[in-house]
Image 1 (cartoon, helix red, strand yellow):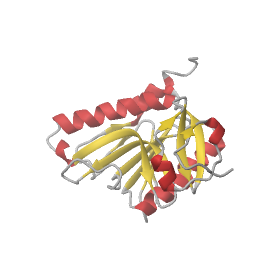
Image 2 (image 1 turned 90 degrees about the vertical axis):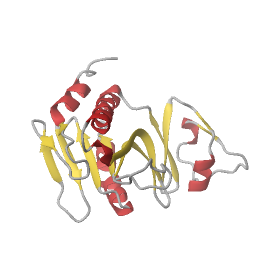
Image 3 (image 1 turned 60 degrees about the vertical axis):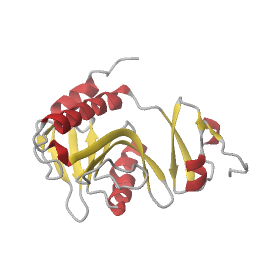
Length: 202
């Protein structure tokens, strides 16, 4: 199916698989809020809203980052962090769980400034794992993202990806520190516990 309308469409599950240009996707003004939308190599991909097992730890990470920015002596390194934002590539609009900008010295331009760090919380399923560990990894690093963090509640790990370097695996008991956010400690166990809290909930 291809897009054959002069006015921007209302995005919905029915349009999954539609061919679109990045410009057509960016022009959309209305959508069904029960779903999330990405443009992947010119194809509209429609997925359900994230589970609390993903949004819970994401909010906790956002809380930590805000505290770091406001209270740590080196917190000014963090320009800003936003959840549920698009990463713009030449032919795609990837929805990322969290974007982090650091070292700009100003408020980022969300549509223009490549994020310093991109964070994804892995969803269940082989297809989602392939997307997060392989597809997004390649696209984000090629774009110039300095670090890509993959928080995996199933493997109980944090994987840190950097261009031209071997991936760093942080175990559940570990703490990750990056020179991009000096003095910031990412303690993995509480993030995974925030995901576990929702297991078994309807």
